[in-house]
Image (cartoon, rainbow, N blue to C red; front, side):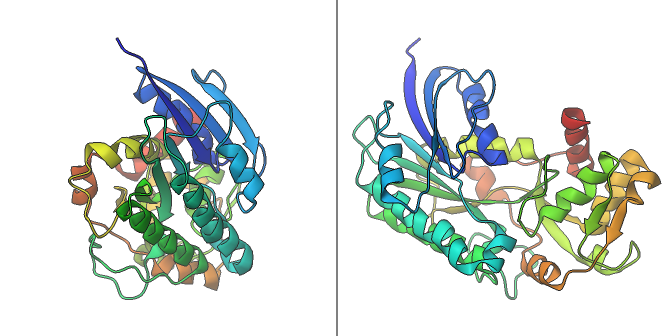
Length: 341
């Protein structure tokens, strides 16, 4: 059997998803000898037991010298780039300039560096850009289609949408082979809450499962009608990791199926209301867990989350080769409990 080699650069590799992605990629493609360049503003640590070569770099992507270093390691130029760095939604609202610098300006700089390089086979570098449902806003149809216009209502979504446009344009010009994948809200996330507006969706499950109080910033009580009205588009961590690992191959394997006018794909997920999340928690851990959820209404949080779409047509993403959860939110809770409780 011929062993293939592939070098992958992951920016934002110190984050939760970025830290887990290398192992998932290696697991999916045991016939490939991978070399990973893991970069973040704080030097990331490789997963224990990762069957691959790894270089970890502390890198500020707004600095030319840092970018130069990432493209000139002992592994050579990357064959694939996962652009996963960013300032999350609440952080981008609180510090607009920093959000634009990290989420947009450094993305353009990274793409320019990829444009000036070639992969080990002499072709354009593959780029997987992680985007968000925050690119949507304004009046939306009940079910969002790939053709539905994006009208973000926050700094994070605006920067991500501009990044998507760059991926499409750089691919059209032949500078890269790119795809933008809009991530669902990934729940439940382990660890400490992030600066994402949607972080509470994980928090109201994760904290009670660990016997800790959680703050729900939408609604004033468990009986507030807004909990039933407010819905979010979610996916399990394992499913999202699988789809991210697949994305680098979708770029070429499904090239004839990706629309010419946009390289953006909404990753599959399912719709759940905040009340349904709480009731799923109750079904698994009872009233004792639900009683640990405390309600502290936050206008900014509710406004941003309310602007996001609640349901997408999964058919385009599934046709490209991505996958979707089959066991609902209770399955997501049980997956978290199996791994962390």
